Image (cartoon, rainbow, N blue to C red; front, side):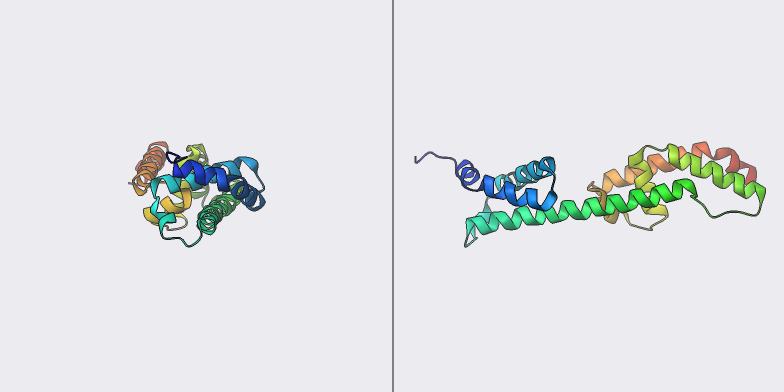
Length: 170
């Protein structure tokens, strides 16, 4: 059929094999479906990805593989950050000898724990890990502007919550 959509033809020819590969990589049908969709979305947005390829099938597997590795990388980082956060939630700051300092640290830990998870992640990565907004954006799969906004909102909430401690120091 001459009017056949090249993307539809490509999908029909390769989707089943790509899904099987992605399922073997992710071990989660939902993730495999999402990555399969992302593979063909990428192809729809950038048809030139196949234009220069010697093998259409190999090019599609390369795209799918790169997406799967990116997902794995993000999940590994998120899991590590979640584990670190759990450890910090139990003892977020080093013990303090001064009772006022200990009370402030407890209050700060509680305030940090009350932030929405999206803001808490950005605040943590910025303050404790020293990442730039560009790096945070890559880790959390956000735009740098979104990372900066979440940081600003989180810091504003912390500042408001801890205001009495900061004001008593001045």
